Amino acid sequence: MRIAIGSDHAGYQLKRLIMDHLYKQGIACEDYGAPNGIDAASYVPFGQAVANAVISGAVDYGIAICGTGLGISMTTNKIKGIRAALCVNEYMARMARQHNNANVLALGARVVGPALACSIVDAFLAEDFEAGGRHQVRVDEMTRLENQNFKIDPEAQHD
Image 1 (tube, rainbow, N blue to C red):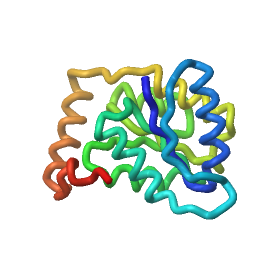
Image 2: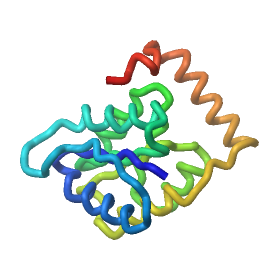
Image 3: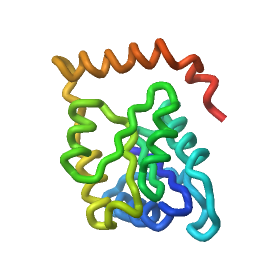
């Protein structure tokens, strides 16, 4: 499994901690985040980079982190094909994967502590989408809505 992980300056420390946590489990991470936690850095390019890595198939899932998780989740959800879920507990992370087929996990570094964040990541990555039935119908409905409203070809999004 390969994970794209990106953050702005506010999420830098949590990003490093999660990367170490995943490396210890043998999970490869690609760092698409701010180079340090000192200089202010917009979450927008880092969220876009994570989303593009997921859409291109370079990675299996993405993790996007900013101070609250709000801005970076909004940013990643602007990319066609991304279903980013801002989660503050393990239950939300499990449901995001099982019911919504989320492909990006968003976290707020100023909202969840390090231990909880790692537990949320583990819950997200441990689950599979429950394909078929009502969940598939809803994901298909989201995809149709996205296709009606997103005018950019996903192939044109890659830098």
